[in-house]
Length: 351
Length: 84
Figure 1: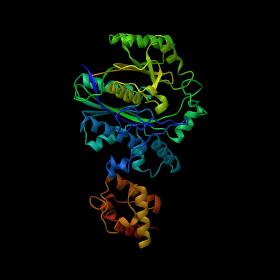
Figure 2: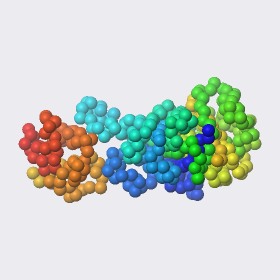
Figure 3: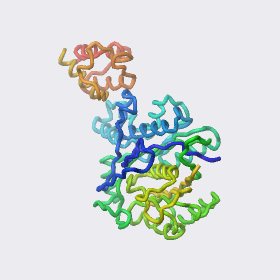
Figure 4: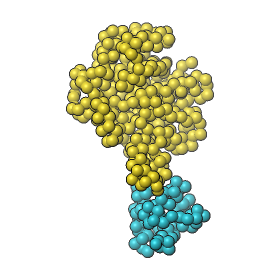
């Protein structure tokens, strides 16, 4: 059974929202922290509901509603979100109040907004959708596990269409903490990929896809397979896992036209991509995405949005090609890892 | 009383994040729930916390809630009657 990507939507540091994919006007940032370009939410979300929504909830809800609108689906059979950090700003605000007010007189709204499943719940509330609703909070696997759940639902025919999204926000506090861990570059570089140094650039986003188990008239692409592997000991082990993934789908590296890698400019992070692109995928076109959206645990949802757009347009924008030739893409492999721990593979092809 | 009513409206707008409203948009006798501002049960909890935080008043009987929170004016009357 094929899984069709009927529609996609993304709020990101790019002009992605409301546009049919990449990217007429690429936003180039001279910073080590990228923030989403957000739409006017008042025109998208019921004003009565919006007052209880924090920024990340609005990002998630608007992206989800935009995706459903493009898919011409009013109420999906399931809503599944993936988020590593959840509603971070509200969590921070709620915990601060908890301490400052000696655990007394805490307001319900701050608590409601602080839970990880708030985004999925708010989407359901707005749609009056009582169907399956789940949120995966598994660090760098959060979005992938949401996708895997959706695929299972569709394949066992418990659902005909599933709304799946990956959402994470970056706050001042989280940026400072992650920066202290050395996750981000200390100075801006416009040679993110060509002069790797320690750290990457921080990012955030909310990207949704509507998956269906029957073909529609205007599908973007087919999601052929998703797989994850945890903490490989060596680069050879990663290569072995990728080979196995391709073999399981009756494919070889030669069947891949474009590899979208999670290259992020960190010298340690990118070694595995260097080896792959000079080894098993040496003649293949490589596209990168983290200079567009920054590094965050569910950044692979932005990569899937981008891949679906590339497949639909049958064209790779030259500005996105990191290495290799301009090709007409029939099949894309997304290989991403988060901090060298959570590795994921997604296979996307034409309908 | 007028000063308290104005102050209360400002607190309500801030606590409930009623971004598009000003105190002038809320009538003194306008219903807060169902009609008027059309607040809901979560807002009711926010208003209870507001009374406690801003005026040090605990709503002792839950059954008094509908009467106390009928309008800004009834809230102001309750605060005046119960403020130490």
